[in-house]
Image (cartoon, rainbow, N blue to C red):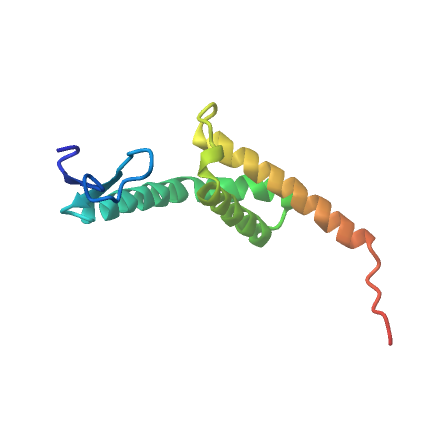
Length: 130
């Protein structure tokens, strides 16, 4: 037993000709019992993420808004920052606090937003007539 779960090990190919040419048999590990454990761990991850969002979303929006001076845009950028965390959580290396990490991403995204906004203002909005 490992972590309170029963594992069943099933070896196939012993004496039945199913083994490979090198004599290696297929080994199958199956988890029996509670699939709820996987669900429970996932739920714990979601709960932890929810707590992080509740704690850091407003301060992150405020921080980003100081760069972009547009609360709606700051909220959108903050949502993107949390999406980035979900999509690429392996990039967080624990060298800085999670708050610092999120604010670094937020600052980068805010500066990209400003750069893009400036580019849009400088580009003439001409509509080609055909």
